[in-house]
Image (tube, rainbow over all chains, first blue to last red; front, side, top):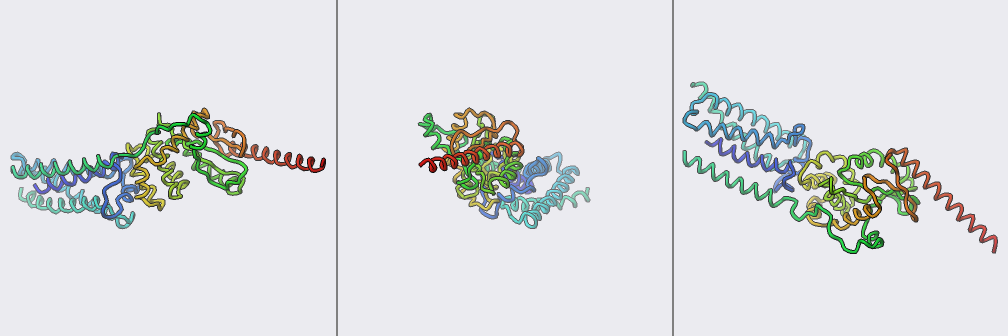
Length: 137
Length: 248
């Protein structure tokens, strides 16, 4: 349940960054750091795909999977547990990489990216007990 | 379970509201993205006064190289990034010519070219016109794809050391829309229908237009021709002065 709520918050953050990347909105609301510098850097997209779009997709998968996991027929589903675990781990790893880029390569911080990284870390930590469930099953 | 869906619902509503508000509040807003209504420009003298090119080089240089350009036009980008540096080295740095850039945003086919022209003028307010001008062409493929390029422009401004807040304030207003519109009207009055249009001339008289070949060789040929004519006119003037002095 907690993963679903965090994934939903993350989804909105990623969507806000995606709206900015697509030019649907002007400058980012950025009280801390230098969001524009991060968002204009060459690391803000992977080829033609904005990193924010990857975030939207990732959070959407985590949200759908976690909501599915609390439905009566899926509570003991190994597939759901695996998906949450893999999604949480990949998301956490990707967030670590992006945070490294901000701190060591771009030398600027974007508050929204940091917030997303914190959320992904919490999602990862919350998904860890799934390993126990998998071992039990 | 019901409480979970309530929490999820509240987060969804809050998130939608906040993101929706941010997107709506920071859209292009009051930014002028299209030509504005200007009265009195049917008079050629008034139009000449209202249109303002941006000059690079010595104001006393005998030859003027004029460009009418559009920031979304790829050929203008090639001219600015590849040919202009050679022209600057050969003629502007040596004091033989000055460059003057006039905006000619082809708004019917390039949706972002008007606001890009205004952005360059906002950069000019902070004495960074030419750097921003080149940056717009260098990053053309990035910002042209955006529905609202304002934040990209603010990013470029900051990367060039400008005051991002002042730049954004300028861009999100209608500042310089009048000058860009006047430049456009001038280009239309001159019968220009493509960009870049390069013209080379002296202080007086109608400048000559370069053909469709924008290579440095072609620019050089025309500039050298105009320079030779300027030298010859100067020599003839000196001869006439000597003759007049001798006749006295």
